[in-house]
Length: 344
Image (tube, rainbow, N blue to C red):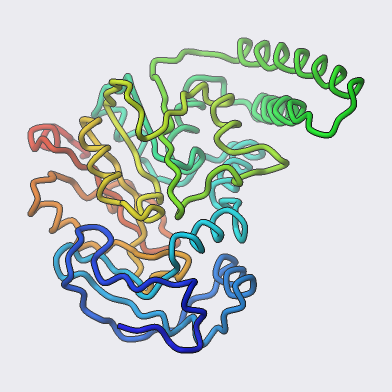
């Protein structure tokens, strides 16, 4: 494996081991033309990379866990720049939010939520990193009256409230006015929620880390961060992945974020240790869109079986209309728990 001499070598690292299982058994795949998207276009433009050179980033398949990964690929410094500066806003994350607020549309996971709540009693529920990608909206629509006017009003007031707390550069009079506005808004928000509240039976948590490969504090819309907005909207608690609190989850979900960390096995192991059940949604594209360092494959489930992670493939069961190659599965360290699940 080598870096083309036309590349700026300091931006790239050659990954000789599998990012998931650490195996050295990587088999090179044929070069494929990249499928451009707004992420790759921005990366090519901002890093001054020629498209032909970008296409020379080779693809490999791990012969142990069947992960598909790119090498050479960006080093951690450049990766953080991509997900903080070049494309700091998580496009799909925010589009899910806007689609729900404006039209009442839930993120498209087929009938996953209905199947899960019929099978698992969930008191503590957690998700990893991106708050608008998974099932938090499903819980929200169950806890509050389904009313578009309510969604829009609450969203507008929450964004105004969080924006009003941005005081840098303001005069004393402007700060005083902003403080007054903030107090009025928070009272209004509480009143709106109270009027539309039905019932809440589930404690919700968003687990975050500082992975260079994931959107973080720059994942903003109208100067408001997705995590800040989600904590107010969903009444969820945000916890750092390295927390010392002894929280156990009945269900933990990872929606298209397991391929947005340099330590995917650590994240999955954490989830399996902390939760009875873990749901994973992941990309399975063999081409690996080059804003990703790796992608999973359907054969990855065979690897999980070999290391005693019991699972059930949900991809076809949830009746979702797929717009891309994706895999859904639920897993556990206890085979008895997986056997209990009935999705008929």
